[in-house]
Structure formats: C-alpha cells, structure tokens
Length: 484
Image: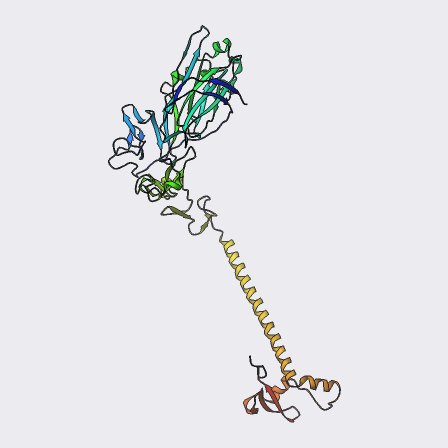
C-alpha cells in the first residue's frame, strides 16, 4: 500500500542544522524480526588497566569507558547514581554488546498528541534525538512505531554523507474509527489497526517523529474513541501492542515515562577495513587474533576477535583462545565424544570401539564389529583374488613368450625348410624327435654327454631307444639376437 502526502514542514534542528523542507513521503509497510543478545566476557579483562568495568549493573568494555584514559574517542560514558549515559548524547545506556557492535539505550522521546472532543489539545512538542557520528540507529533491531487511529505518522531522519548531510522520511498509516474495528486477533499484533510499524533508511544519526490527522478520515468519532496517539522508534523485540493503548484506557507515554529501548550500531572509525588496516597505530583492532569488520549501516568499521577466540579486540592481547572443551562452552561448541582443545579450534572424536559420522553433531554409537570383520574379510579376499589373477596372467604371458621363442629357434635352425621337405616328400628317411626324446637320449642334456660349445649353443652326444648314436645342437637363448 502506498500513500502520497505533501506537507510543508517548519524550521527544525536536525544534525546541527536548520532546514526548511517541502517533501513527498512514500510509505511502504514492512515487517522484520530480529533478536538482541549479549556475550559474556568471562575472566578476560575488557577494560584499560585501572579502569572501572561497570557502572551499576551495566558492563562498560573498552573502547567505552568512564574516566580519563578509559575510553576511546566518542565512547565516553558518564556514570552517576541513576545509571550510565553516553556523554555525547546524554541517553541512558542499558547494555553494550562488543561482538555485535551494538549499544542498547533508552530512547527518551515518545511523541504524542491528544485531541479531545471538547476542543482541548495537547502534545509533547518536537523532540529530536541527535547522535554523534560514531553511533547509528540500528536498521535491523528497531522499528518506527505509531499507536493511534486515522493519522499519518512520519519519522524524519538525518545522516552524514560523504559530501553533505541528508534527510530520510519514512511513514506508516493506521486506520480505525471505533471499538468495532478490533477483534481478539488484533490484540498484540501491530498491523495497521490502531498500530503500524515500518523499517527506515540506514546511516541515520538523528531523528524525530510526528503524526498528523488525515482530513476526511479523522473525525469526532475517532476523537471520542482514540483521542491520543503516540509515535516513536523502538527496539522491535521489546514492543508488544495492546488495544488498551488505542482507547486511552492505558496512556502509553505515561506508562513509559522514561522512554523505550532503542538499539544503536557503533563504529570505531569512518574508514573501510581495506583502508583502516594501513593506518598503523590509528588502526584500532589491536589484539593479535582480531579481525576488521565493515559495517553495513553506514560507512565505517569495527573489530571482532577471530574465530576460536574471545575477549576484547580493541586491547592488546585482548583476544584469548576459547577452551571449547570446557563444560560451560558445550552448548556453543558441542562434542559427543572425546574433546581436545587447540589454539583457536578443537577436535572431537569417538572413543575406541565406537563411531560417528561427525562427533560434533551426532552421538557416538557402538561400532558393529561383525560388519568391520566382514569388510576386512571381503577386502582380504579381493586382494588374494587379484593376486591370483595377476599370477595367472603372468604365467600365461610367460607360456606364450616361451612358445614364441621355440618357434623362433625352429625357424633359425632350418626347421621350416625341413618341414616343407618332409611335407613335399623330398626326404623319406628323416624323423623329427621331440624335446622329451632328446632329453632321454642325452641324460637331460647332462655334462657327461656334452661334446663342445659354439657361438650358437652346445652340442651333445645321445643314444636313442633303438641304440643309435646321435648328436644334437641345443641353441642358447638370445644367441642369434642382433646387437642393439
């Protein structure tokens, strides 16, 4: 849903300047959900030496600090009996989150207007929350919120750009005229009936909120049912809508006279990390195991301890190894087996006799020994079968090689000529003896039957079965091979 409204605004002070504006506001209703959390510092020192680490119940980690020499730049915190306050803006500090780069504060400004049917009118006036350049209104944790009926609510924000200051305008609209517009489902739901919320632009260092009745919609019926309206920027997770805020049975501003929670993003420098790391001593990520983080909510950077380390990245030696194996760290660093801590990391393995696909995620279970044994037997059998196959192939190769050698010797010693003579019957009295016949005749080519040796082999004397004496020439392997 889009609503286009043209308004002439009066002179106002925002981010240190007075401006006269004519603007067109475009509304787009959006909804987001985020969670705010904190990280305990443990036993690691989070402050400069000899500096207090708390103001009341609020921990004050460096670069924030109270007192001379205890803070960096714009992060001075004033501490008194009522609580901790950012010295640059005088807003109350509720919590500082070092790892997320957030500070949770109390937004003291709830803008309100009351128009009664008897003509009485009252309002909170124009209240501007102005921050320093190192604090921005979080776009992920906050919502611009309006409570009321038939009015257009607007949030006018200002930021500091690279060349000049700029303004942003976000708005939302809530429609209702009387109690019949609501049912039980509308309670606790801020969705356009008696309450509306919207996101806003990033890189905002100051803002104010206003609401104006829409002619033709806002009338005496609305005034009698919902005479007062409220607009403010609030931590989204904290706020819960109630129909009692609309019909004035509960005055929201009076109920929250100290304001509402607001989350701010903070940066330690306006540079990007690629430039900041080359700034030498002015680079504020001082710890050895720390890293630079570019922020998304406007230009600038902050620091974090590297993965596997915790502490304060803005202090020398401020980032220490996390003992992931300590029992209190198990929810963040689970291990279902044997945990071994290392510098910046840890390993998790199952005890002997058990197994797991990943002991950091899945429980260790008893190993199936029968399956393991069957696998071992299968692998062993496969290896034996492979070796048998290799041996058989090698034997067949040697057999074929020997057959080729025999054929070659037969050819070299005139075997083919003799064979053709026999086949053509040119030789009638020739007989071919087998190797076994010659072995028997020469006593297996023994030395006692050896007659002499030549360049091609050895000559033996033998006696055949029929007592005939013969000589045979046994060719030596490789005797007739040509030299390389």
